[in-house]
Length: 223
Image 1 (cartoon, helix red, strand yellow):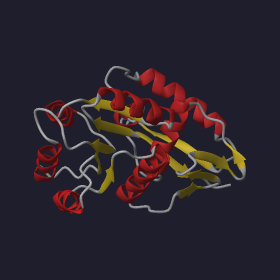
Image 2: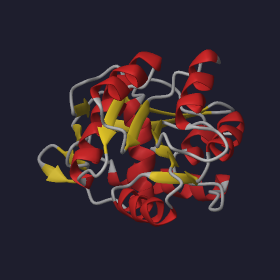
Image 3: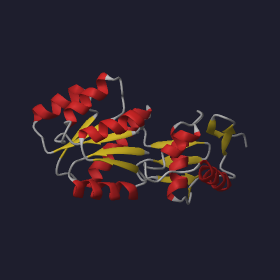
């Protein structure tokens, strides 16, 4: 899952990025609305964490611009502006959720998980394919009742595939879910993660299928 964190308080941004990284999210930071706008023209994100009081281009203007362009990326506003009028106004502008500062990181992550589930069209935190089960709240994969041990990047690849189970996920989209701009994943490295995952999924009733020239697909297989 790749997030854009748009926050001009650098200490807060660094702190949030570190905690979100620990939870398995790839986070790109923008410290102004203009910087975020430039990133959004060339990059795709699973969600945006958006402060409102940004230099150069306000969070409100950035949100207006996003929605006027037909960009439906989920937006979670994080702001010290916590009046009912502010909340209602920005939800009406197209924000998906609103969290007032100061906030607890656990609440932020819970709201983020809920927002991402709604965006995927599946509000159930439990997702399954064959005997593979994933709890998006605990971020734990299980095969039957056994926890599946995964490295952070293996976890990210498998989560990206499971969220689009039965559908093709391109190599660029998979690689994009793992990294931020200064930490690119090569096609060879991605293939290594796929090989490792296939070994760990043996006997799970699930297979990662290669579609040449297109990407990969996670699918249940016959026993």
